[in-house]
Length: 265
Length: 336
Image (cartoon, each protein chain N blue to C red):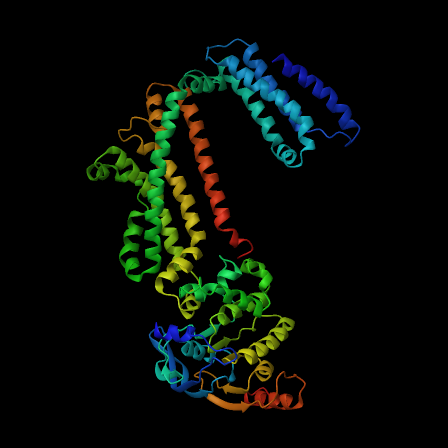
């Protein structure tokens, strides 16, 4: 209850609501037919409050697993993860994971979907306006009473973002949220994500396969190795927002990162 | 009667030029054919002598003749009403077939005696049952509906709760699933001997039999529905601060509703199937009891008349469940 209260505390207008994340010696293994399948190998990573960090790496290397551990949905086999010094041992609405699939509840309206967090914590009746605000923020006010199957892929992912943002998260964990969208929708939503982050100043950790996406959004790009994943390289992206994909510095960084991934052209 | 025939003649006369001159005054042609078939059935009923008298034949002829007259009128009116017209157009062949069926039925039973008494009855024989027995039949319908509603209602509620528990809780599933798999395939009626011992009245025993028949498919389908809910929905719920009860009531329950409805439909058919048997257990009224009673006295016309009522009630309840499903599961449109 205490952590929930903390998550829901009124944040003064304009003051950023974010946390620093400390990942210390985290290793993780899946049990597969009795045998251990190691996916993460002693990861050490610090993310500053309000920072936008992208995790980049080959498919199946364990980036998504790391995100689940940070959210508190799963516990690491070894090591610890802390948010502002407090060890993460359970999921909390102040740290929200957005999946590659929007995973909206198909049986109810977009409005009720976005309201899920407030409803689950029993504060919806007093804070109905927050749901409307979140829908407005992602441009879905006109679709409040629609059902998820009536939304396009991009709209559904916007609704999933609204469902996360309505809780005013201090940490937003994005697990390839744009991975399944067509390339045009993807570009639009990348710009929208940056705008949202710059406005709200939450801490953001993005898992992606797309080097360009990482460079457009993040202030730091962490490159992971093959499974079991360890941190292979780190790139600071010291460019002003909004960024352009043709920016020569960005293009140079892109070539460098692809090289690190063994995909030099 | 003769009115209907005249009307038919006029209709047919007016129909052909209109049809010949194209779509100027559209006519529902199947309506005229239906009118002819129904009128023929009416004429046969009153005009030919009976091999064995059955009663209510004048009333039957009047009803069927009036229907024939109505078909003639509708042949001209229906095409002007968009929705009702489409309905008539769609079911036209059925109306014709029913008229032909009445005509042949009347001939083969009452008129020629090819299908003899008491095993077969002409349509006016069934009508005669409704005319003479309607009070008793109404009481029987009431008793049957009470037994069915209590049995199916209890079975659905208990079965649903058990299904959610089995699908959600590992320890419930550990103990419950083997038992369910064992007793599930046993026909509900096989429990009759022990129900007599466990229940104070035969009515309670009957309710139990109907509840068991309808409850087991609801339990199995709900359990599998809850068990197969996309785990990512629970992750979303837990991440947003939902407690277990919220995960059950707001995620597991609605997500498994399509499965539950399949179980409800199966339970519905099983409940109808055991209803007649359940009413054998020392009942004083009820459609099943009435069928047993009349069979014993070779009152087959009464049996057929009751079967028609049962068929209509069952079809009506199935229709109601479909309406409920379409409302509750409208979100499924376009989903999967």
